[in-house]
Length: 409
Ligand SMILES: Cc1ncc(COP(=O)(O)O)c(C=O)c1O
Image (cartoon, rainbow, N blue to C red; front, top):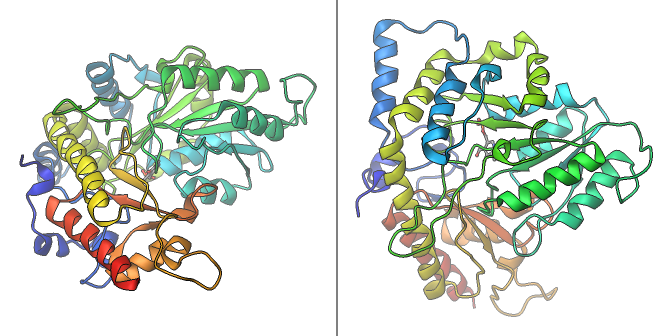
């Protein structure tokens, strides 16, 4: 199977100048940051080239981004989004910040579900919001009891949803699907979370940047699907941040849109006009082209990611059987539990690779991964590996990782 992940050689990829290819020395296999080793989507190349040739490099206007996403969402998930109230914003994290500014004040709480995308912590803290953790369960799924406890802490309302509370507002920032575990939250989980949030007066914001990256279910493997938060009953007051950036590998051409349930449309209107000033019109054109004309390319990428997710399971079983790994339901990220790796006797009883697997694999295997500790509670002893690469790179990375542990014992 030849997919867009199988087109470029490592030498060609190393000529790229983005962080993935410049952060480490050339002998390191970079499987850390969420960039894909894909040949680009032709529809995007054509749209950007045409815009540059036509000099269509002015300011962005209107809701074309939201409208293109709505067309994609209708085809993909049968979900009709009201794009008329959407706001085009420079990127996903800035969109989240703008929505948090409207829905909360400094000192208010933002509930997150670690392990989760590290900037959920940094950006909210920078805005003076308090982060309250509601960790995922050990099965990697939303833990509704933990969520309820976090809502009680966030709002000061007694656990059971009764009482006056602190008067402070709060937001539940849900990563749907979840980076780094690849969990797709089910309609039932989202509906239960929304109901709890309503009981505590907590507003809900979903980051849906990984939404298109579910599994097609090839060769009899299970297919998975994304449930848009705003398609779930009880989401009338919720906001979703959507983007083509992850699925079409466009972080260098960033853009995003905030879309709202009917009860949250006014909140999006309250985002100040200044927030739109960073929107890059050519990036919007790139995303619109991806959403309107890039589905075939996306499906080919998803076939490659699914192949790699299961290949990784085989490679780990062969070279690093002590690593815990469950192929996720979405994203091109793999969440590896390295706590079982043993490299022989250690002074404090915790083997070195399990202590700091990211440091170990970088130093001894020359493979760059994300440090699980950055993802909050539950990240200790874990690393995140980026699957969106060719078979050769993935295979060599796991072989090197396996060798680094074997030679250490
Ligand atoms: C869950 C999640 N949200 C947001 C982002 C970043 O998006 P942006 O670059 O548009 O801010 C990423 C990047 O990997 C991500 O995984």
